[in-house]
Image 1 (cartoon, helix red, strand yellow):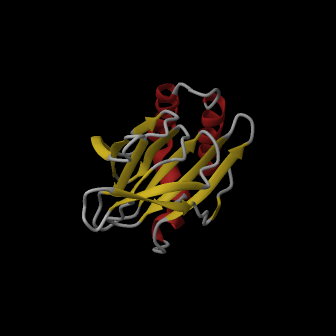
Image 2 (tube, one colour):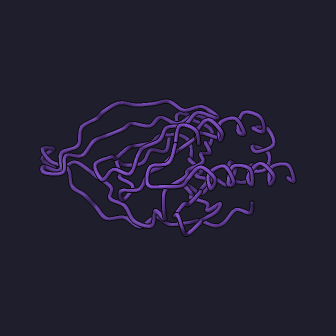
Length: 192
């Protein structure tokens, strides 16, 4: 447990050190965070074992926040085969990294005038792999745990507090997307 706390602190420090400015170097952040996850993955998995075995559905755990410049760091637990709706990030930049298990991330683009969403691509993340996005009101994505049996864990770093966002669903006619305001609930706080 002690080593996993050290690892969580290292991840927090990297995110705080590199999460500066309106457009931080997210590639460098991904590289440094990934290095730590690869090096200390076994200890991290052991320290976060309770999150993988809780079986209480999708959960967001706050690791740390900083006010200026704004950065929030979370660990999310994804039940087997859990998928989010297509959703935005309230215009924040962000980085998402698999810590345990595998995640599919579909990137979408939202047209400001029409509200239409179009699929731009997808990534598959294993432990230490990351995807990131710049502060862009038109960016949205959908994430899914690729396992049919195991809970996946991911690390998320955002350029501010992701307290609210929009989730998108197709209208009953299927010809347009409806935006539904959401509040991001935090299950609890992790110590780092």
